[in-house]
Length: 121
Image (cartoon, rainbow, N blue to C red):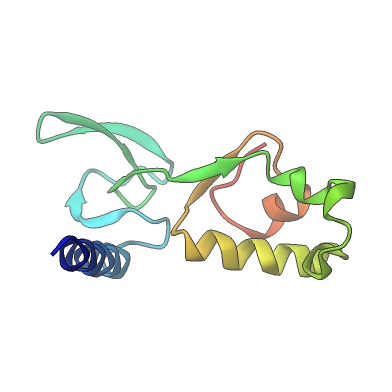
C-alpha cells in the first residue's frame, strides 16, 4: 500500500511539473499569473502576494544553484564531460534543464553567463 502511495505521489508530481513547464514564458515565469510587463525582472504585488515578475510580466519563482564553477575543480578532472569548456557548458545545460532550474548566482563560470539566461555572478 505504501508503494502505491509513493507511485501515485511521484506521478502527480511529474504531471504537475510537466504542466508548469508547459505554461511558462521564455524566462520561466508562469503565464497564468500576470503583472505589468516592465522589460526587467522586478517585484510586484499580485492578488495580495509579493512575487518576482519576469520582464514579460509573469510571476516567477527562481529555482537554481550556486557555486557552479566547482565543476572546474581538479577533483573532477577524470569526468569526460568537463574536459573542455564547451562540453562542460553542454553538460551544465542538460543538468539545469533536467532539474527545471532557471536561476543561479555566486561563483558562476563566465561561459555559463555568456550562454544561459538568468545567471549572474
